[in-house]
Length: 224
Image (cartoon, rainbow, N blue to C red):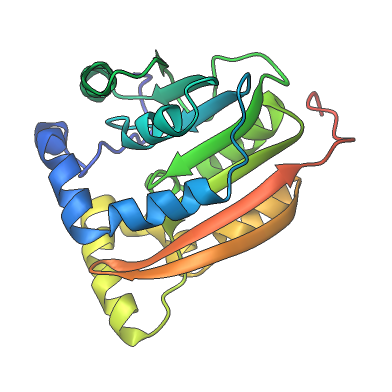
């Protein structure tokens, strides 16, 4: 992967990647929040969908199982975790095109995807990389294409705020502060998305999970 990107592996260290799936399933109500995310996505045959920061491919597999007639892509910056994703897709009998790359330099052409999805990824990015990633998502989305994000959000109460300290200790305070302060929806709007809406919040063992959606403005020139 490119040097000096501040890349954070799943569970911070590559040596812990094998534990990622059971840890997420145990602590984050994974099936609940990922199902809620996908319930807000209008999946149709023939669409092209990207899971950005796809990790081990759980969300991408869920999409492909819900609508086998679409073209599903997954992108991650960790080649080793992409191999896990490919094995998972093969085990579940779904077709997914996995690519290695960074979110702020997507290896896809302009106006390419109907929807871009993201799950537990944006809290790994520092503020600058969040904005660069949002700009790249705008570029690769088709006019009126949609972005759907599930990630840590503003704490609902002091208990959820205290629980989130575990995530901050693992993944870093600099990358997670925007999330826990509830800034991600505003950053999406600032980047040029419209119709930014929080579809739901879920209490988990490690803090508040937030589902946010938005769409690309039809008139936006992706080259500017």
